[in-house]
Length: 104
Image 1: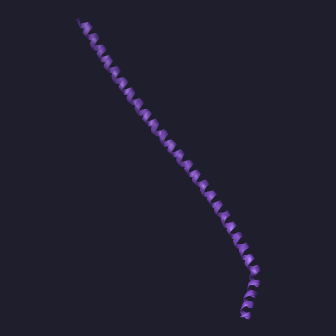
Image 2: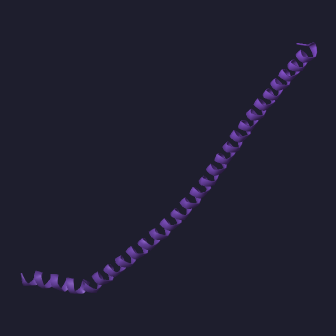
Image 3: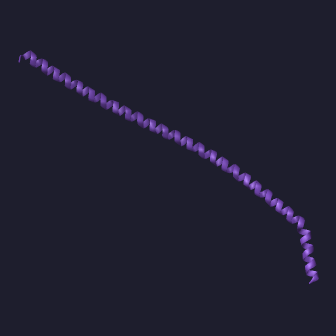
């Protein structure tokens, strides 16, 4: 083989190795970039989910407070109705007690 042919083969081999190294570096960078982008996407989705959960919790707490107020108002109304009914029968009950005590 001539010196020129050996030089050509050597240059070709070096060029191939350089391209192979460049391709490996490019692939490594692509993987790193994709990994970084994926992590950022996951973090963004996590933050968004946390914000949505906070909103859901706030809404649920507000609905619970409104329900609690409604139940308390209904209980107060029931208590008032029972008190009024008891007050209306108070004289009748006192008279009944007096009749039973006097008749004994």
